[in-house]
Picture 1: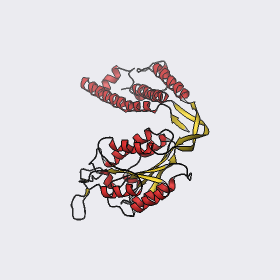
Picture 2 (picture 1 turned 90 degrees about the horizontal axis):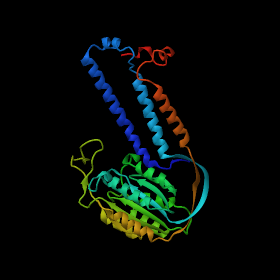
Picture 3 (picture 1 turned 60 degrees about the vertical axis):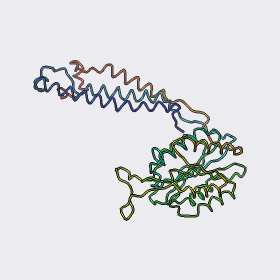
Picture 4 (picture 1 turned 90 degrees about the vertical axis):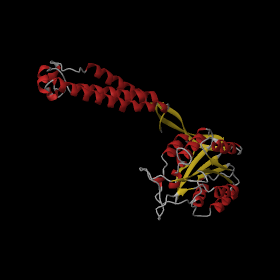
Length: 344
């Protein structure tokens, strides 16, 4: 298994396109200055040793070396030994509504992104638990099977969008049934479902599905996304909002009664998400009350550092870049490493 031990350093990769933009800007300014000074062809004859391509090659080498250095800082590793470990924890299946109504902005930045933020914090506070994800709109499918790999869980979480499911709707009941089937067969393990939805336009008997989950020992907690007064639904990539057949702007409203009925049938709690962390704290407290039981998980116990090859290649690039001059060397030009037509 491949991983970065310190992935936070990868944000430094954003520096590279910025440096490239600055380099291109300076080259354009330089060419304009030459044209303002005189005839470029005449100036090229007066400066026979000036190379056009060498500065570009040097910059490319430095940029690639910087890329490798950032990778070194992030510490790439390969897992070499899979090991079965025993932990004391619970199993949590997240059931997330990704219908278009979840793009409404009555909570910031929108309902779906706020839901992701809440789930990300819940995953961060997990230590020995297992987590899985089911996403739904008009259909439901398993986005992430139950696992103890929190890194993968957060990666899958960030990739979620309404585009994952073409058929729109709110099939809460089907999603709950799929979540119940996604738990491991261990009857001794405490299990919980966290349903995150606006509860709008539900298409099946979600309350009955929650009651069936309870019969199998699964607690169903519900986080309501949005506000009862509602908000319009933006159309992705435009400044417009969804409209009905009569041309009226559709206002998506949180169906709190439905969410409360589901949580009551599932022996769980209902909490409305807002622009604070109240929903996260409430659900986290409820999960902490569940009894921990022994869970088995396969993890990679040993990792080999792989940064050495990246560091060596970066060093070689820096050495080569140092010896590549911006001006043409008359002796080296006979080797024709660079095109003879590179002169300005």
